[in-house]
Image (tube, rainbow, N blue to C red):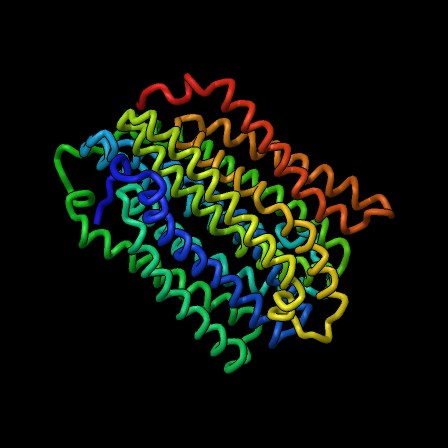
Length: 447
């Protein structure tokens, strides 16, 4: 199934495409949420702290692959909008080779530098063994993550956001079942949670690859006209490198904050591990809506539908802000019950700190919703460098304020929490100013 996003009612077309993406990535979040919930319930706060800290590292590593896949998907969408079949096929080949090489390099680097990684995260001595046990397994899943994100970006660039949802649904259910079996049934500890996640990642990655090969053979079969060209690699890299850099900077900032959080001890680490999962789950729909908006914009940019892009911007902004405000209300009201899903009610100090985190960040989800739209817009309009600038502004101020405010006794750990919405706000202001200054040149024609 392919869907042309250059035709039909703007908001209806955008939402029809976005909703499967949102549900799909909500299911993907279930991988790590299942790990966190089951580990917290069956293994305790210490194991939860270790797995939560490892999650921040894995998010950073997978962001490199995700950034490359997203950048590639933008080029695929533009070529699809232009009806350039040869350009699309050669772009697919170039992107696959590029991501394969990067995945191999990442795998080599993380296994060689495992002890250094544990040290740089400022892991407390009592959690080092658990952290090493978890990371030694979870890194094996990088190839599965590569396969899933590459073929998901390809299918979505063609307007097919339903199939990735179906594969994620199967693997998410499998992950939860294996988590319970390995951790609660077989007593395999943190390594069991990692094993469940890795198996599920390969199920979704290999499954979607096989589906794409069968369903769209014309895009993947060997063809004498389709060659591996350095010019295509350069084109893919032009989009992917900056998108990858954006994702990496975003998650490097989060990783630096994780190191700061770890310095406050196990209680704060456990609170952060649980609250971050709730946080990410809460604003994931607007993040995916931003990605869907980006593909919508890229197809229309390739087809030179300037007025349709403008209508899409207005519709996307309204929908994102409205949804974010509703989610903020729910998270603020139900912060404590949400925390008790991940940690036993007796861990009052952990729950209290997690609730404070959610009350601060949860009130400002509309700011990150707007920021995700800017990321998608500038990526689609061949200005991925601006997305990097916004990410640096957002994360730079967050990291700087987190370290500065947490050192002031009157703020303490709350200073880390407040640094996040302040960073979102600064990036939104920059993105808005840039758009209104450059609007005419930004929307002028396609590649």
